[in-house]
Image (cartoon, rainbow over all chains, first blue to last red; front, top):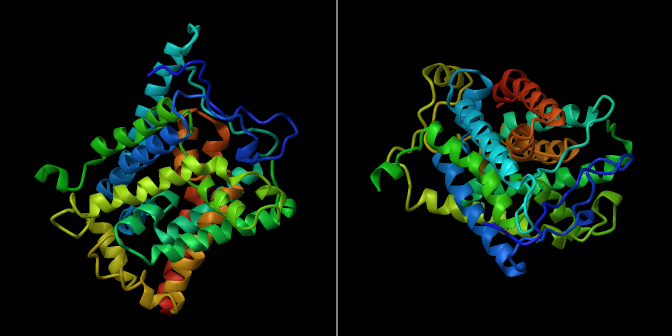
Length: 177
Length: 188
């Protein structure tokens, strides 16, 4: 797979730029796919991810309880092996992209800005964890559970979008960094 | 085909989930992350209301396609690839702990007497589904990422912010599991 002049979007935010730079401010990606191709590819990869979420039981409230009670290895093995394989494949892609001739992609994941106490990462993370422990589903599984026919997760999705909206409203008054 | 219908072991599904990061990047040039879709929805519904939502939500169109794919994939997994046994095989210790909290029915992917349309108006059902969902959305946006963006993509990139966020995920999850859930389930 080699897109011409392709670079990953989402460079690190400039110093002084607030956290959570609007996605719209990021440069558009320049893979070979046109707008329709981008949507079709995203849909297909999402489909594979949805199958994986359900068949791995990562969408199960019971598995999340087992994880937070440290009573089973399943979720740790799942997330741990995902990180290891993701890291190895990204390292290989980086190596392939280094000093690349035109036409090769340079693998470069977007960087989260690290500064000061980084308060929003761990404070926001703790709030997220409170929700994850109750609902037993993080954002990917919320969508997946709707797909399994558990329509009550439409309520959880609406509540999550409401949570994101409330964050947008309170953001100027919340600590960041 | 039968082996595909059984639950997939972590050492098969985990590496495949890890490959979503490079495959998505190679084929779309996008970084794996789900919770930004909540922000895109807010920006589509109330554009310009808050600074955080002042951008063109259509830049997230690919992500709407991606989460639509998650819904479709889950539909396939729950029908064509449905497991023969509807009970998730969690550990004996977790079964005992949940039974002590009154969660006895383990059929399906979640306790349907706790999470369901009929229990939304009860205190435990409301706390778990509505408050839980709200905190997931609020926290994911405050932390600038969720399990996919921080615990997978961020840790793949060995980023300190993502490590801090994942530590927070666990701190919050432990409080919910050992303090809040017993409280609300006891009250139900």
